[in-house]
Image (cartoon, rainbow, N blue to C red; front, side):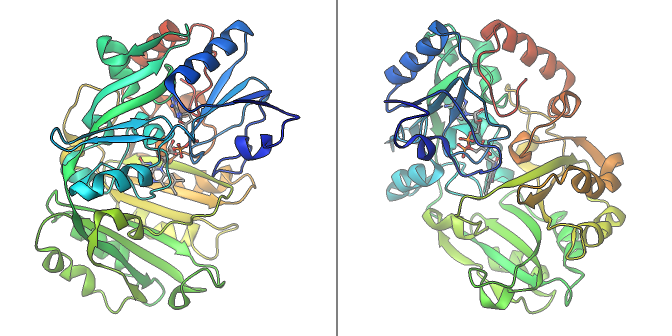
Length: 426
Ligand SMILES: Cc1cc2nc3c(=O)[nH]c(=O)nc-3n(C[C@H](O)[C@H](O)[C@H](O)COP(=O)(O)OP(=O)(O)OC[C@H]3O[C@@H](n4cnc5c(N)ncnc54)[C@H](O)[C@@H]3O)c2cc1C
């Protein structure tokens, strides 16, 4: 169905999760099939219009003015092949849709912290998930991709090694993906959840987590967030108004309880949600807000978590910061470091650090200041955690130099007119 600015439902169709600078297209195609995607792309070509794609809308950086928006939210089927341990995921399916389909067979995809995120957008950007240190990036486990390229042709990307390589990590720059087939893993349950420490009471938590990450096996994927919690009812009572260090844990196999003993030794958490968890409930590990909101962020990938730089975070981004900052640090390494023939960059990174600012204001200066002490440890950046427009030089830092050259050459080959407007435009 095509909607224009005068149509009922136009606003509902153009707005996704991220409310900062939403799309303002002339036409919205709410697609439900690959054929409808093809028709929408052909319409844009025939009328010489730009194209943006939106699934769940978490990754929007800058809305388009005019042009065509292909809204894939209702094109969200998932077909599981339990024998082959794969799932075919349609363009607009969220990880919640995928996990709901795979969990009855005791299988899990390489989904991330928030089930509401679009599975395809996440995977095109690499996809750093809850089991990342054990199995690698989501983009490392893609079997097939169907895509409508900017000549209006529907293709199997794996028939063209360049296109298949670029789509796995290079983002939505090469065509409108209609479906992907991904590997599934025998993971009915996890040992996971969060230890929420009052940072003022337990300032050692950052250093203890840092030291602990150096000792853990690949079965452990963990992260830490520093959050000045608002003193309002949606926040659980024990956390309200406190500066919280949330240690987020996803552990495969047995022995999780023993593995996290050094973290429990920090002291009594304000809230403890760690335990055996069905994979279908893995969204409870991070417990990220479900409500659409405005936010911006900057990310760096780090060679190490330097203790001196770590000590600056609560000062620069804590409750006394000029505006609210949420710090997120993820432990990388393990299977993420294995070389796979796709576009994902900087596999040598040991940690990912993101500073996120809720709200509509311009937080660029503050975010840059928070990341400045890390400049000597920065090896690149991860675009999935970069919510907001980046400069061309910053964008380039997401990839190895050779991969960058190949990606930009392929971008020209597949979309010479630069018709497709991705959230991070190569
Ligand atoms: C709360 C939260 C938690 C997150 N957790 C993780 C995490 O754990 N790991 C991780 O790696 N990332 C994570 N992300 C980032 C997320 O994976 C990206 O922002 C992703 O792009 C969001 O997908 P979406 O469908 O929701 O967004 P959308 O805004 O709908 O899509 C983002 C972009 O993807 C492209 N795109 C979308 N669909 C298609 C298509 N069919 N064909 C071609 N291009 C397309 C477009 O360029 C679009 O602008 C998180 C984001 C949020 C907000």
